[in-house]
Length: 167
Figure 1 (spheres, rainbow, N blue to C red):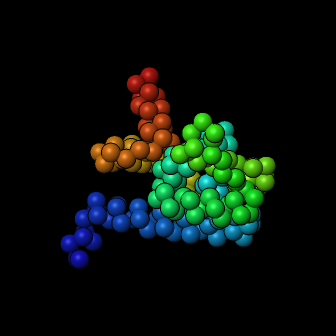
Figure 2 (cartoon, rainbow, N blue to C red):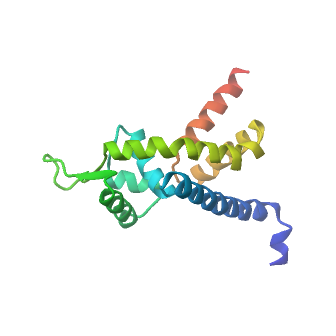
């Protein structure tokens, strides 16, 4: 184990895991306390809101980084709370969509500013724009190399590359 401690790449990877875990814990606790909504539930609502309030369950699972079963359980609990409903279109009975309800929109609008404030305090205040740009480029490269997709990271990396090319 000792050799890993002195390897900066191992420390960077391990640090990534710890930062993700601790920041997720802190975000979840704050959202639960201040908005009555878990981080997972807010992610679900925002993924639907980003896609005009409606998304195919399989696409939603991919976007939420959950298994199909995990997404189904998350949607079922949100459905029980009136935040989403499931629809099966008459023209494709094999597809199921999660659809944001008015209560879901209201919950997302109540919780998202709390999320943004917490992200500012927990992350943005400790990372410069230059450091964030390096992280975006690194995460994008690692994701692409591992045949993984993350739209926001890829779009930010493209914007950074375009900015670099323009200067």
